[in-house]
Image (cartoon, rainbow over all chains, first blue to last red; front, top):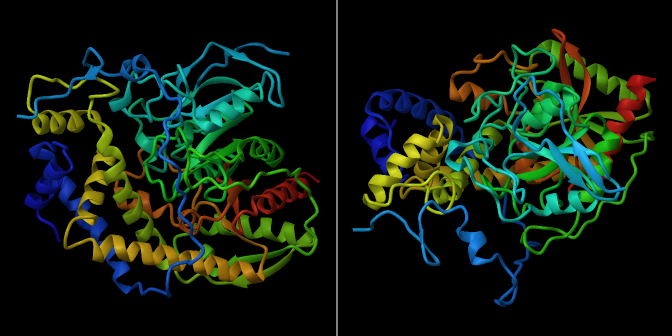
Length: 89
Length: 433
């Protein structure tokens, strides 16, 4: 079981503000879902993962890409060739 | 002949978020055919929202690989279809742009999350559309709207340009009125793409065949178990009998890991979502964040306001499932379960060619019927196993219950998308005979 306080902490970690009056409902739903997830406690590994997997690598070479204008076109706030975000400090 | 398609079909079911009144098209196998694209697939110059207010106004500067391929074949891209926000839902009610309704009964949902694409095809606005399927999001709305939808083998269609929700599970796939059109789209969509590291070089050069004599079809007991509405189960059993009449061989089988497949699915997709959706912060795209205030204060408020409740719930569930102390209990176990499901499908598919059962346990719900998240999740129980196993799965209409369409689901071996298309095509031929 998770408490309202824990749900509030998780929301903070996920950068999502939950209104105080909604916290109770979120917590009830959260607990119902987590209780259902408990069925995973019974899972046991059937063996090693498949051995036929291969990693796909590529050389780190410069490829043609989008123009600076294209990249900045959807940003809310820009300055020269930079995107502006909220204050860090 | 190249030209311009004038798209004036009335949208009675809120199937589209964005539409192009006139769409240029070129020459090719799809020349002049109007196609709708689910709104989580990037289209150059055309708004792409994922059904979320957090991406409202976002105009992608590039096309997804699949959109490039469709344009190259002359398709007219007439618009972007509605979906549950970021693909998170089974009804298309969780859209930031209002729900889509079912063309067979507007008081009911079209299924989800590719509900807009399914409704657009079912209402006759377009003959074909693209959807995406993370845990059933192509097959569920295909079943509820009475059309054909295929989730290809994982890796067969490039995900480049699909705005990621749960990378290890999702695939782009075709939705159309019949299996032949689905097959035509697969010929075009299955092209290796180096920009998706999970893309597999396995072209689809196939024309559907109605010949299924000797095809072995496994019927898992779990697909007809508790929770499956008896009239739906009966309708699907009749469809399987039709395939048997056409010469297929029916065998009972069992997939015991189905028991925990749904939990494994929801732990996996919420965990991946918590990471994937961290990028939506109003800085690079979508509505602009206020830059005068401090970082976390502003992001928390922005994401609290612009994400819908289901998206918030899934991000938070994923954040929890990946947190220190809980990772072993949830995420690690879910990956074990996923591997077990894959192995079981491979084992069963050694002795049968395909597996068949209902796509959904019921017909389309009424709008607002599934207000509790867990009960909504439970309705995905028959579709998520194919995503965990990575195998191809198709839904083909097989009759009606309460006047609403029922879908027959046919699941095949890895990279044997052709075989599930053939089985669906054969069923159509027999059904209309």
